[in-house]
Image 1 (cartoon, rainbow, N blue to C red):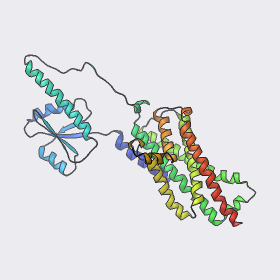
Image 2: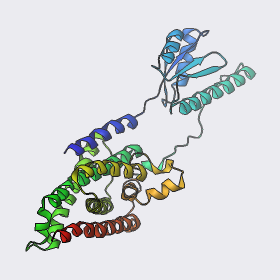
Image 3: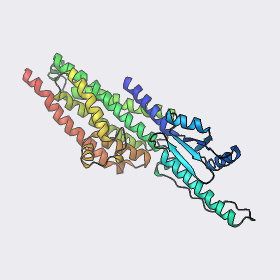
Image 4: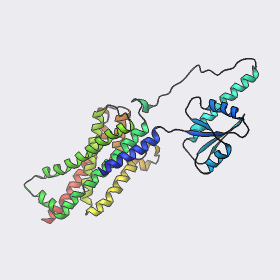
Length: 343
């Protein structure tokens, strides 16, 4: 439950930060009157994409210096100056908006000067509305969906691998050897342990999705077969990875160190913390394809964002299953060696 709580907290904070990014820009002037500045404020706030509010010049400069504001707009009659206290991702959007407004007002002013007796007004004849691919499933926010999937898979991986510490303790105490050579078959012994870890992972993913979906009002769609197929194959590969680590690592204390390194490293390479599209290094991209996290995140995003049916997700599901089989085969062989040597 501890890692489930962490996943919910992380996704809730990150999702809310990016869900409704409000851009607020202080505006000041050193020579315009209050009425003239208010006219510019009305024009700048027409479409509502950026919120502009008037402020005293000295206060604006002070807030920039104290890092209380990242951007400020200095407006005069025929020109403007955009001041930035530090680098911010909002700057290009604000600069583009202000530039468009001033170009439009400049053209209108020239036309009014040429035809002073006419009442010149700006009117939109054609309005173009663009829709991004992330809006294909209602009002879904792509970043929120990405954070939800990435953090959920990361903390689920961490939980499953951490719980498998019990197997090493059983190996050291000799309980595992007695189980292997008891009347219970090896298949039953392995299935009993693996089913428990698998079930814990399923419960954590389901609870994370249900809780965060309602908390952040994220529309995950109804493509449940594809989401289920990707989630189950991801869990199979992670449980198998745990068996491999147990076969390699000799003690619970060392596994406690290895699990965070492996989990976080695979999450970073596989695109759980940031979208893999921002990575351009070919070697890093190649390494990411060797991790279950990459295929789990990609498959889940395809299922949720693009409503891709499970029949078209055979590649990520198949790769995850193949990884699981390889990890499981090597891990079981490594685990049984000490048992044979003990006898």
